[in-house]
Length: 439
DNA sequence: CCTCCACAGGAAGCGCAGGAGT
DNA sequence: ACTCCTGCGCTTCCTGTGGAGG
Image (cartoon, rainbow, N blue to C red; front, side, top):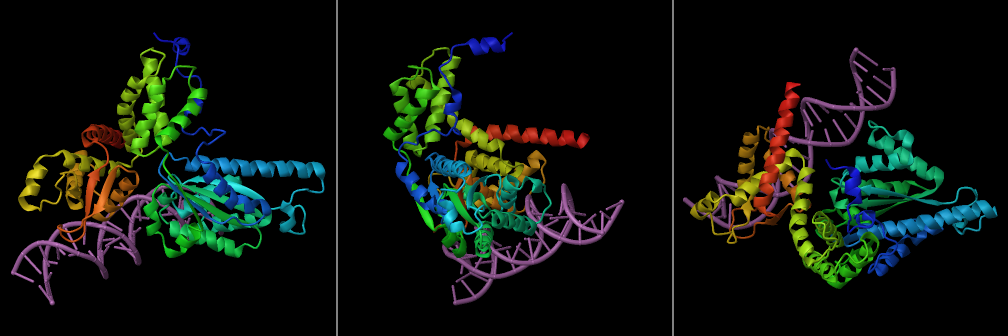
């Protein structure tokens, strides 16, 4: 029988796992000084009670976008807190902030920040709801109409002369972004006191093309691109975290460099590099070796890749899982190739791309197999889009050679690994549904 | 050249869930 | 308890696109 004491007393390579979490915000963000300074300059007007321009930040995952923004916002809030304190102390209000805000002294412009993860709050309504929830907790109920929420928020802004800064992380996930941006700009037009600024963060550069001209011009007032980290930068970042997160001298130089090199080769993703190292540490702990070498990192790499895919899959709605399953089946099926060479062109020479119609056929039969009701082809196309957004599949427009225009689909991860996972998850869903029916 | 095919993606509309108002 | 309203997921319908084939 294992006890918690035993587990806890077991020696470990970790000193403080919190530091190694992707959500941890370090004091210093190395190699992002320039970007941070730019963002600070753009946000500085908030300190003079002016509306900062909207900012759009682009960069691949794990390039420090969110961390940098949070870092700047933290600093901004610190300045306001300090000012608040000195005002209370000095009475006369030394702060320059009150100058512009005008006569009624007490109503100094205050900056408030609302962080919105658009993966969860993925529509205009939900974003607005999130803002309301943050600042007007008494309104924290469903059922209010969009217009009610809008009025309450603008009322609150005008009353407190608030300079609201809304951070929209993964802004490309917002389905009606055009409407959202329109609402934001309209609010600014209507407000005589207070303002709303938006910081949009995205890892998809091409999503700009899908924006309407109006939201394009308003969201992209200021734009900054976070480049991927290079291998030496990644290893410096890892060193910084290791110093605080791992026990002394437990991680070899070779392990750090390998993790950095692997991550740099993939996408320059610091989160991925960190994850590799954490996994390598876990492997070392399991083996009770108290030392992380490149061997552990090598092993970690294999499991981290599938871990990531499994995580994404488990959060997917059922029908997206079925679509994914269908794509995997098709990618693996050999009959398909025979079929293709028979009546189709030799278009997918590398044998990896599938036609969207084919996958839909497979999806329909998968629906039958799992006993689920099928969705229409139109909705299926939306699912494809979502899956592409998540990086589970890649799609390209069919160029020449294929009838009309269709999409060619490719599974992002190894289909032979994903298929059993999806199968398991889907049969589980099925079992749950059947149980629910019995109840 | 015209028509057909196979698909993309916009628009409208429908049923449902859940809260507000009465 | 009811009616009304709103957002959401979804279907249906429709228009557009571009190669294949007559």
